[in-house]
Amino acid sequence: MKVPASVTKAHAAARKVRESAHAPYSKFKVGAALISASGELFTGCNVENASYGGTVCAERVAILKAVSEGALEFADIVVVTEGAAPAFPCALCLQVMAEFFSPKTKIWIADPKAVSSVHTFSELLPVPFGPKQLALGKSKKKS
Ligand code: THU
Image (cartoon, rainbow, N blue to C red):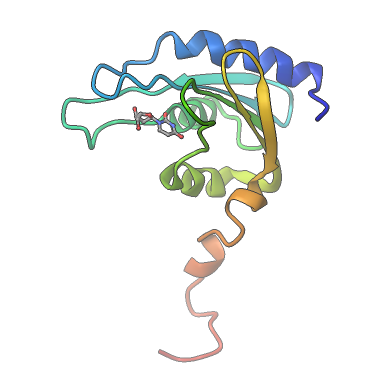
């Protein structure tokens, strides 16, 4: 697997932001670094909440930070975790990714030492729910 310099840089950023994770409940710290189509870097860590349900994953924090700063298209995301097995984005994060990622956006799975695998977004979520499904009045069948 060839890891481009931009991804190596994002991996270092994800590893660093992971140190800011607020994970007193799970103790599972996650760092994410998103590379926009224009090469800007946006980072995020998981921010847990005592309600549990209010917890936000690192990937979504990075995406929401990026979108709120005006970035809407993304080339890569690096996700750093440390555990018994590499961790992939959860289904809720994949749904949020579906809003902004292209099928070709690359998801790099890593631990603090190195990237272990890379996947296109369409490999992780081949049939996303999206705006096409919401198009009103355009369906062939009446319901
Ligand atoms: N978590 C992430 O930040 N990203 C993922 O893709 C999976 C899970 C966080 C949420 C929670 O704070 C902790 O990891 C345990 O689920």
